[in-house]
Amino acid sequence: MTIAIILAGGTGSRIKSDIPKQFIELSGQMMIMHALAPFGESDMIDNIQIVADESWRDKIEDAIFEDPESAIAEKFLGFSNPGENRQMSVFNAMKDLKQIFDVARTNDDSANVSADAKENADCSKYMVHSKFKAIDNIIIHDAARPFVTVENIDECIRTLDDHEGAMPVLPMKDTVYFSRTGKRVDKLLNRSCIYAGQAPEAFRFDKYMEANEALLPDKSNAQELIILLESMDVIINDAPLHDDNIIYNSNGKMWCALGQSKNWHEVGLNMKIALQHEA
Image (cartoon, rainbow, N blue to C red):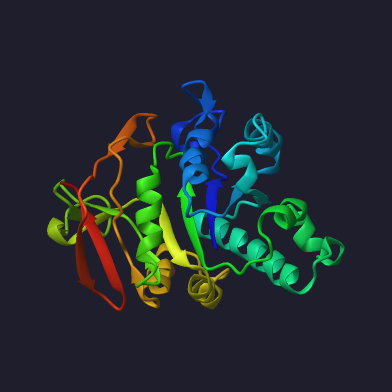
């Protein structure tokens, strides 16, 4: 089975807003609901786990269960706590899922689930929707990227048939400089070898959990994340990105990630990475 982890733990600090960007209203709904919709629609997604601060959980649940028969409501498991950074938030969700699924495979009675599991995830929803299956894959997406498509999601998951991970990227079109101090240019980088990471990202659950456990929680910086990815046969696959995959920058402006083609390329790192370029 495949579980979507939706990251909604941001505080909105980069856009200088009292309301975190994932909860800003967009076309009559919170942005997170737009991000959730294709995960509800995709036949390849079995369940959805959301990382969110407790102060926003009631509002999220109210929005999800406004239509209790919706695909999102049917797939929703529960919540996990945000971490100190994005990777720790993902790790928290994975730990919650692993604990609950491990217990559920050996105990059909939710009363036997540990207190920590009950606190960190909604066991009753898990019991209803997961049917005690093992977790094969996870796919990770940011709630502040509201226009991901079912095509994006399914393409990433299909890539896991042959690889341990799939990460969408876009080719770099700007001139890119490297600076050690942030004050002077040390060198010009070859942009043909540089790609901008996008979302969603998909991984085989056991392999990604193993890689995270080897490095986290004490080593959660960007450099250690690179080591984590290189330790896996991760295909950084670029699923075709929708041209309205909106994110927000520090000035509150919207940027659109463009990428429509299905050209795949192999990159010679310690892992196999498939990169999809825009047309």
